[in-house]
Length: 266
Image (cartoon, rainbow, N blue to C red; front, side):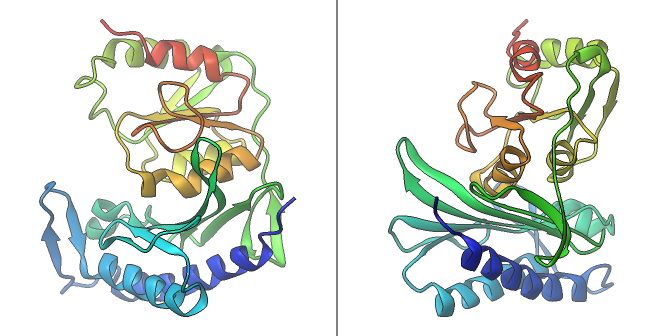
């Protein structure tokens, strides 16, 4: 089994640097916000966080490729760092503390690149989660002060808590009917947003979650944290990993059943 301890330690260093950049400008009255071509916002803090992460990686892992939301792809090879400097930029802009830096290392494997290290750092919440392939998932303040994560054992949808980021996209894909049927079947629904529902699945406080439209940098880190906590992470098509442009995560027990609802089209 590969040992990713050094890579995981580096991910924490990267997250510490990004946290310093993002928290310094959170709720700043003069925060600079621009609109990207896809009509989503980007702030000076998004750019600063990605720049500082790329700078560290250039020094520590010069041979590794980097893919980031704000500055695209750089380099080639069997190892790729995938960065979302601020997942939840709209929350960040509005002063809502639910935002995080997402950092993942992906390695070439059969069937394409797969996450082997993932870290989610949410400094405004005072939370951090991480995982490495074959070594479990954890939450805590540091590598030396952490608790292991495990998904729930809920086995019935009628007992399940279902989380999602928003309603946007389900109707566009013709999945709104199945989505609404699922919300009526489960015990509880909540729209926690962005990275947070996936971390709750990993912690066992939420049982299933899904989003209809995502990018690789939105999913790479959360995918391995969920799976190393014992859960299942796929696209809505059932393909394992963060490769389908959308996501479904669960405790594993409920996965096929809840995917069935989300693939109903009417």
